[in-house]
Length: 103
Image 1 (cartoon, rainbow, N blue to C red):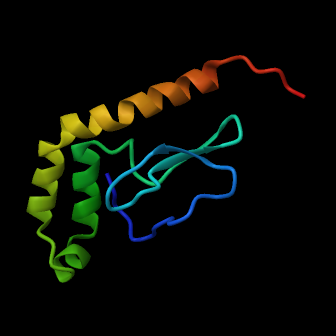
Image 2 (cartoon, one colour; image 1 turned 30 degrees about the vertical axis):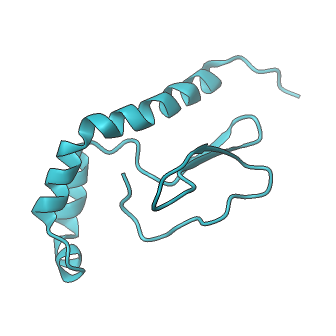
């Protein structure tokens, strides 16, 4: 789920892409063994998204968006959103839980 205007068009040198998308190709990447970055909101439920849109309704309407339509689209896409980000979140959890030798 995208809810921003900033775009990272090019990954840092040495970055490993982890997730891509049509509109924003660099959705997630890893740099080194344990530094992960995302350019989307895996934490956002439809309820969280509705809170965001209610807080910026005037700006969204001014840009030609329908707040109700955006909220409905996110609610309708909830299962697909979870299916898209859950594998990434689970993989990250395994990295975090894995014991590492500190040098």
